[in-house]
Length: 346
Image (cartoon, rainbow, N blue to C red):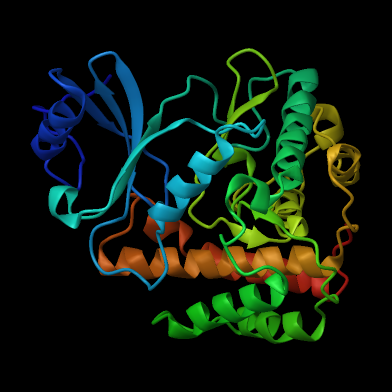
């Protein structure tokens, strides 16, 4: 562990307050604390306390948009999925009192494995890369096979009309942003409700941010052992997650680590069609992915980057590079327009 409770660490709270809380909850022990870099949303820390190895997630300090950073929902979905075959870390506790760390927080079991933030998977063999992508598809299929009402999540969101509600939510969030307008993003916002497929009634637990960087893989096998970062999860449609994950094939390496333009056959990475076929081979019956789902996913990610830029300007972004990634909103809006205009097939 790189830090401890007495050392200077990049924490947005008083470490001694957390250590006193853990002593009161678990009994005597010493704490080591380390902030995990790379996150753009909820501040995350490794916490060792005695023999316990845990991860702490909390809301960011400062003003936030209504409904954002819902870590109570993160903890609830982890509790519900822990007994299933969906790979998630074991939840430990949730604390909702702002007084201790400035915001609510929760603790979960720390899993040992590999996280890949670069979707080209440098350093792996072609066979390993293929296995990682197919393992990602299988983990997503497992999640979407869970019936929400059977794990106590029947009221985790409003069933039905998921895309209609999501378009309204993210369009409203875009409108509330103080950032400069992005014309392409406004065009996409207008296109989506006019091209939305008829609701087919399919309801699953939608992760909301299902991508390679939010998965923890076994140290030696291409197997997902933990799906992470459930902040945006809700009751939704499985094609929302599938479309979001498919953005990897439609974004370049400098656009949040996509693989567009790379020789994926030489790398061993499946084509998008192969990835989709593998998902559908393991999933509950689900309609095919359409152009709409990709455009929607690109739009939503673009609005998320608008929010990151807003937080960077306000000085309360969770990651040091937030000011650099914020401009990606325009890039993702442009990618969405390419699909709308037929310049990019899938």
